[in-house]
Image (cartoon, rainbow, N blue to C red; front, side, top):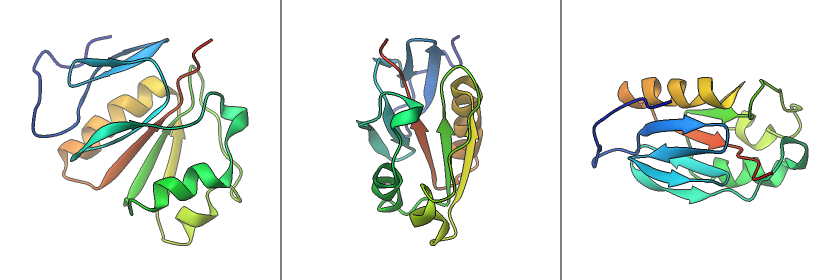
Amino acid sequence: MKLHSDNTQQYQTVTGYDASGVEINAERFNYSLLVMPETPPRPWNVTRFEDLTGEHFEQIALDEPDVVILGTGERQRFVHPRLIASLSARHTGVESMDSQAACRTYNVLMGEGRKVTLALIIDPA
């Protein structure tokens, strides 16, 4: 699904998504990644929801976001609180949702000027 027809240069915006990947500013990504409004997307070493560890969320905590939107694939899944302890200790909210909802929510929060991180799991299978 296409979200925007414009190529936004100032901020990292989700411009499209489907079951096999996501477009950030019209550039296609077919692997899990972390997206923040003011920095280029970067790979996130997660291939399946079941592989998530606390270290994956510690990596996100280093960026000090206000909120993390976790896209868990085709269906919404919730992480165990111990995995997000590094974020909880910083009073950073973590919202889990299916990846399509996560992409839409990220765009809304980013558009509001929030310091948000989209953590998107894309299973290459």
